[in-house]
Length: 173
Image (cartoon, rainbow, N blue to C red; front, side, top):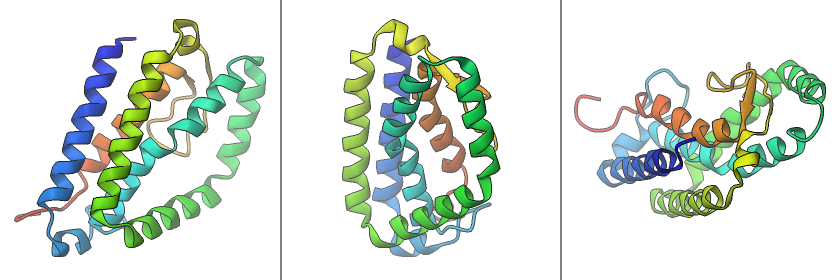
């Protein structure tokens, strides 16, 4: 895993997030995004949420990566069966977060989570980055059937980049 590249990806996303927040008018933030049911502000929160859930995702890999692969495979199957409730919570959480948090607060949260991920990544042992588990592939297009901790570190920026293209900020959308 190229740690430097992951650090650069996170910094690029952080700069892009701030650029989007700083350049968006109130009308831009209220405008419907492209391809989601969220407005732009809610989608920006959802993009932040991809990084905020990293602690949970990393803890799952640390736990399941030490168990037989069949345990995480069964867990992933169970989570895949719960896709509909997950989708409802995912939508509602992003709608609420994007409705009630200010752009300034979202920017602060983004900075904090990226700084924490930088510190955590620098402290990771190589052996831990290679541990992995099965993931619920129906929950997100960037979840693979089996993901290592190194893969998980790349997930939020893949998720961010995908949704960045759905924002309709600025003149001309």
